[in-house]
Every structure is written in C-alpha cells, then in structure tokens.
Length: 267
Length: 238
Image 1 (cartoon, rainbow over the protein chains, first blue to last red):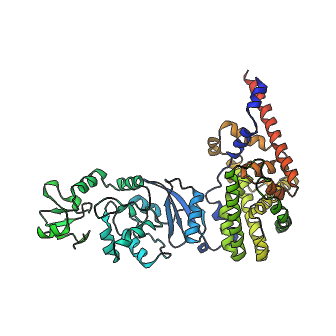
Image 2: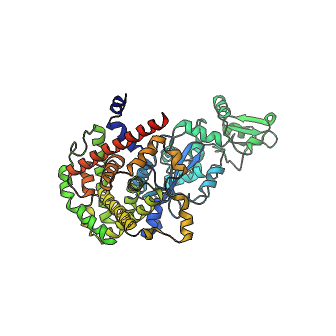
C-alpha cells in the first residue's frame, strides 16, 4: 500500500503544491517602498479594487485626479490592468490600500460628476463627449443625439469617443442609449451594463416596453411639459396623466414644451 | 550594508554573458511547453523595456521595477523566512538597497541588468545577512516593550493565513523551513517564483548544473520529510 502511495505522488504533485503557495504581498507594500525610496508622488499612480454592481472595479489615480478605471468582470486581472494602464497612460500604477478621495462615495451614490478625472490624453472632441456623458445624472438615460448636442459635436463621432472611455462606471457610458432607446454598451459587455443600470433603479422591462412601442418622450397633461422617460420629473407623472410621444415634433404640435432639466433635443 | 548590494550587482553583471548563452529555449527548464517558451519570450521583451526605462529615467524605471517584481520578491522572502512580517521588512530593505545601488550605476550598466535575477540576488543576500545577524547577536532581536507589544501577535502565520492555506499546504510550508538555506532558496526560486535554472544559478552564484542539483536535492529532501511526517501521523491515529 505504502510504495504505491508514494509512487502515486510523483514530483509533479509536490511542484504544483509549491506553485500554489505563492501569496500576495500586503496591499501597501509597493507604495511604502516608493515612499521610503523618496520617489515623488506625482511620478506614479496608485490603484485599488472596489466592488460595484458590475463586479470589481480597478480605479487608478494620481495625486490630483483619477487616471483610469476598468471592470474586472471580463477576466481582467490586476497585472493585466497594470499593463493596460501603463500602455495607455505611460504611468506605472502600483497597488495601494487607499482609494482616491471621493471615489467610494461616487460609486455608492452614482454621482461621479464632481470627481476629478484626468482626460488630458484625449482629443478635444473626445473630451467634450466624455464630459457630456459625465453630466448624465444617476438613474437616467440619454440618447446619443443628446450627448452630441451637449458636447457640440457631430453625432457620428460620439460612439467612437464612448468606446475610448478610460474610466468605466465613473464616466457613466452605461447611461447612454442609441436614438431608438437601445442601450449602447460600447465599452463593455451588455450584461454588465444591465447590472449597472439595474443598480441605479433603471427598470429594464419598462425601457424595453417603451422602445418596442417607439415611445421616446413622456409628457404630463397637467403641466404640458415633456421629458426623457427616465428624467426625475417624468418619473413623478402619475400613470393617468402620462402622455407618450414618439418624437419631439409630435409633442411640440400637441402644445407641449421641453423639460428644462433633461433638455430633450427639440429638432 | 550598501556594499552587499553593489557586490551582488557586480556578480549579476559578470554572469550576464553566461546567462545569454544558455538562455535558448529548452536549456533552462527540464521540458518547456510552447506556452512557457512564449511566456519567457514575453518576459524577455518586458525585461528589455524595463532596463531601457531604468537607463533613461531612474525614478520611473524604479517604480516600474517595483510594480513588476514586488510579488516575486515578497513571495520569495515569505516562503524562505516563513513569516509575513519578516518578509515585509526584508522586502522593503531589499528594494531600498536596489534603489541606492541603481543610483550609483551608469545608464549603460542599468541597461545591461537582468532585473529579476539581480533583485532576487539582493533579496537573498538581505535574508542571509538577516539570519547571520540574528544568530550572532540574538539580543539584536530584542525590542523595546512598546514595539514588542505590536509584534506579539504577528509572530508566524496569522489566522487569515491559516484559513487561506489548506492543511497539507501548511505542512509543506513548515517542512520547507527545515531545508538548508541554499536548497531552500533554489527550490523557492525555481518552483514558486518560476525562474529558469540559469537565473537560479545566477542568484546563487554557481554553475547551472549546481543549481539543478540544489533544486533536485531540495525537492527529494522535501518529499522525504513529508513522507516521514505522514507516516508519523498514521502511527498516531492508528
């Protein structure tokens, strides 16, 4: 019995046991090394992994601003994130235990608009589009034409700029839809977009239903104002007073004016 | 203190030529799958980028060095010392020594470094020095009461580590600490850090054949120790 046992435990077993013993260093190991060596803080970025409804989110930040973030749900490992970050920004991101101030709150509330995000590596057009996306409030959806108008750029360039998003979740590309109302998750997998939207209280069934009926706007017959259906004011309209519209022109002809909060595209 | 790192660096440089000759695929490991060959090619490319960066901009290069190799250095020290606190301290020390050494190097010399083997040489030296100091001057290990209070619970693997490691793995960790120093370093470098025999030889400052012998002796000793432990356990339970 004994000899067969040791035969059945050939070198490979021991070696794979050995390779499995590798452990991660403490979170702040690298940052402590750099601090003690006296490397100035602005020479490198630090990153943390935070939990979001779409899975773990790596958030890298310099001393002044967030420089990038990526969801790990597509099988992105910490080392792969570091390599990608290095490739894109030419800055090293080292692990750290301390998130950039305000990031945790921004992720919890979905309000990341005031968070400083470094977009200096992008063209003016891309910057304008990404800034416009940041202006979409939590729990609301906006079509591409709206983004194009806010950013003052042609609608064709919007999708390209969205795909360049350096900061998943913090720049809320999941709140952008095509002009027919279908979500345009250009940066990540659609399931992730659904998870992020569901966490913000956007009902997928309702949006699908409106899209199939071609309803783009909701008006209220008491105020005679029409909104995007996910606008905070549209959500307050009680069902008996809801008036659906397919186009802004249709609403205008019916004597409705556009909401001044969600500013639907009128032309 | 500083000299050890510099000497280590010189030794690393001397062996660079030898390493390059023996670095062709199939020589380092026993059997290399296409995947490992691909990985080692990728590693080589990354190392060349890293040394180029070190030569051009020391601060940026050092940050990148820490980012790429912190896991390997820490894992090596953790398994060699068997204690997370010591691995942390010695790891910090090793990187600081590397930085001071790099500051004194000319750009050309930084370009010719083999970063991983060089760092591991420094880490191994730091650990050997530490062990020597502790055996020669055991009083040096004493600390003021305030510090000792902090370190009280940190001696050895904590509850988190216990939970993370399965029972047989924990036994393996304990048995690993019974190996003689040079065997332990060779086994850990080869099979946990994943270095080639040529790199292990460079760290150990010996011939490639000697490094292979060290790894194989270390492994067989490990196996023997594990076997004797299991048989003891069986005797106890029956």
